[in-house]
Length: 558
Image (cartoon, rainbow, N blue to C red; front, side, top):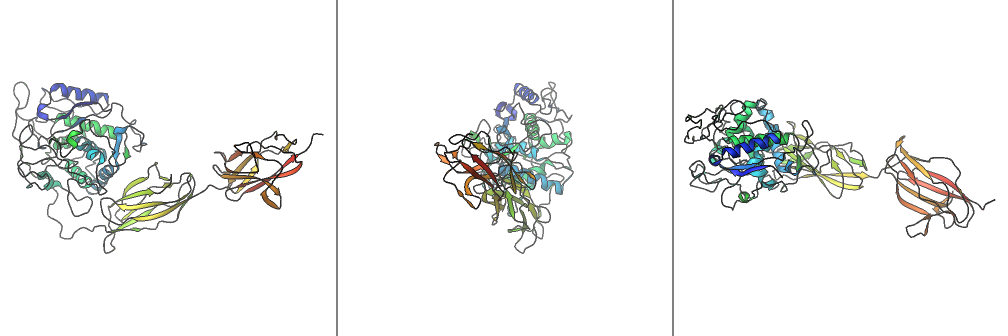
């Protein structure tokens, strides 16, 4: 379970003891060091100061569950951990795709910001528990709105309605909205259409994640710089405890995370407010106004506590994106086309030489780039993408093409489907048929040359061992059939002579379902002789057609 304190807090009600507990928990989890804002006027480790009474977020509440004290992986490890890893490290698939898409989009338009997707994940965790554990539809929109508390001045800021209830359903006061918890006035400035559906929807994780990323990058911030990172997080919610909690989750996700199915993410320990029909204290704070480049400390009393200040009205930042729509609308992806995918075929346990590649186009056939494409393995198969998953989201390049990760076949043979579809858009999917064939060998030999003999009614003293190869290399997992044949010219099963024993102890003169081991070797079960004497033939045949015939001699003792 995650270390936690106070569950969800109202900043004005947070005590020094709770803040101290937060710092202690963060230290134990190896998160970046944070200095609590008690009598020092709220100074951070970076040296900037935060007036306790000044908030650009509407003074809304947020989840304060901390990540587990044991981070999911050591520094520098891959983020692609197996699904059996730490449960708290699991991020719902669509939510994770939205964060990564936002990072890539901003990298192309504002490379100097250096916003990591893990920061968006940290804020999304604190604001809404990753959209209520990933309760979103195929387009990334929450099944029901996630609303923050009514900002009526009771425990939070007093913000009169700015959207006529269009987003939050309240025509008197504003409320934070969506998985990233924007108040309507801020969304009016920062709202994005990340999925190209013609709408800027704060309840859509793709739109909200990109808006949050652009908001954090305002004022020419470089989030690889600690001071700018702190300012960005505090512009989202001006609370020392909020800063500490987000930084803790940021460090946690940087050390490891993995994808889990939508709707299966771990919820905060107080799931009640996640219910939109609940008492109203819904998850998350919100970037309620413009991000200030450097917060200024408020006047302090002799005891060191900043005096309260009235909340600032929302105002556009210096780097406000253009609000006027372009004269020429951006192309919208209307279909996916095969972009040259070859035949998808592999032997069991092997890698597919080809990879699925698709291209996004608009209604006139013009290439549309920067499209999030979901690749999904469908059917009764144990094949997977590189890394072990059956689903992957790839953002297409400027040439409109998106290539799925490499496919690897499992042990199950037969056909399955790789389906390509556009994330958060109703665009017909494109299906590709993939085939897994059984392992084969082009040669098989008996290991050892000792004569195989037995006395009638006894078992052969020596076992029969074989080795299968393919193109000179050991052929593991190859199916083998062993048959006591009638003669060199008749490969049908004999009705007398040496035999194997079945599970019921009865004679068997043909065995199937045998397979070579990891070294391409197979040792046959014991062979028994009946009363017939003479020289008999054992034929071995592998998948792929390789054969070898072995003599078995049965003779009475001299």
